[in-house]
Length: 309
Image (cartoon, rainbow, N blue to C red; front, side, top):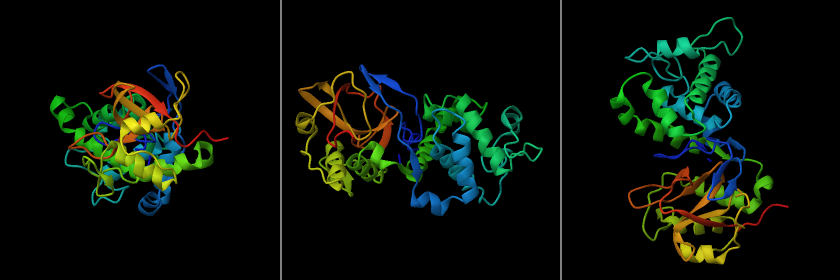
């Protein structure tokens, strides 16, 4: 469920399927996101042809996770199951293209001789192209807001944050970490445990599926992987082992934030592509979000699972 995983992101966050582009974070090189494979929810809820088209289309845009496209398809039309595929404003097809936008981005993806917004293959590929042009790899939330609003004004954009968050939430539910041996078995187990709790409320002192705080989520997730960690973020940081300054981050690393290494205030589990899953603060929920620009600032990382190999 890393996608939305990299778009996920719930309010203002992305899915693990969201950006695969490497970024620099406080001098640390962040690696690309691990491969996402469909969850049971995805295979049960997404028609096989749509799932194939989401995966195929996403591959044409660096940094676009297929789970983000699937999230759009779910929110726009329930993967083509909506009673009507024409909206009151004239948006058409499973990915709900306005005619003017379709004129610019419509494509004949299945080679049947016509670009049809009602054809899933055509619509999904066009959605991938459009989101790519909107910069989904850099900022999935802003790209999704723009996708939803088209050429309409600021009022729509302000009202569309909830749309973007919902798409990214579905994205996170649709993907799970694949190739766990390439990440490290314990890291993969911990990541998938944490991602399964996306949407769980933040609770100060929480350490169960009824609610988590940041370090409670980390401790609980790694316990599912058979690794015991201290309870609070500062102790988790001090327990190490530290990721050397300048070394690339790896999926499963713990990323810490605070005013200094001696004053750690927050922790998340790194997913790849500059994103983490965390329980951020009172009033929020467990979610996926970027590690850049997080307040308090990033201070370092540890590697509780150990690098594979």
